[in-house]
Image (cartoon, rainbow, N blue to C red; front, side, top):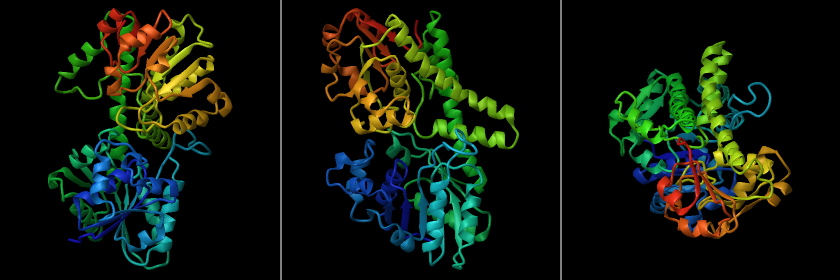
Length: 465
């Protein structure tokens, strides 16, 4: 079996950085180099202040501290790292296309193709190239075609190794993975490449958790896994809307159906909606693939998961507006949370962005507090929507580092991320300094209804009347 000694990862983002840090930590005999053309990001990965790493994940800074400078390196020297590596991971962004054919659904593969062409240009000896980014089915073939036509007489083996990380628990997900999926060609050299990557993971995972498939099954499995998880979230969220019109309690329903061994309890927590980099992007990709093969009914089925998620976000914002007497112009509303979930600073597709945008359209004055998301990131998320000018966004929305003080003379608070610290706030003090009636809209079902009502709040929790 080929034993890898040098790994390069192109892309120092939410997947590449943590994954390579864990591999370096668990495989001290392997030199792992993470490269990115973004100089600021690499500088952040190399900072001495580990609290300023570009990505927040519980346990990440300890992993980085243990390996960085020993066998884990972060660099902008892309060509050198490619040349030296025996195995190259591609972990760059694959956003949904915003232009041309497939706009709004298909994955934009321009960064993947640029990586492939760069590898083809630089490589002087045989390489194993590993798809780590979430990709549409048959992307491996496109990469293979680019690499096989370099004229350098180099043999490339392409593997699909999709990530199944949940942000906020990524380090634990890597160290205690349910499964690792490795897709590759069923040729002798393809099998050798799959075994080489399996050997890396076998440093800390039982071999039976490492599944080898053909490359197409591996690529599609990633999309389908996220689609199934998102489907559960949208399903329970639609029932939360029904609960609010009846005397049913969504928490009791979730618990009751979660006891069914055929269903299980996970991903049945009603909320303001799912976010993150994968769920929406992967479902839209699945929809696009289905439509491209003429499978309209299949595409319509999965697209409904996205429609239900958008409905949940807009429904939450509309409830705030309606409850505040259908006018929020000039009213101060505090948003607790901007990240799409707790224990991460990732804001991609966060429900908070949509809710804030809807409230700003009604000329509300918004204050945002999130313990891990920067002011720069919050404004960038709003500006990306192009709903209004950057100047208008900054005039109507402010970012604060003082979550309790921010509620002085506020009309309402909306909880949009389930950060644990919100549960420990002095809610009596908050109530006393807010304008009356004081409203709290809990989009994460984080607080105790009886306690909030006893303090005096008009308290609204998703999934309860």
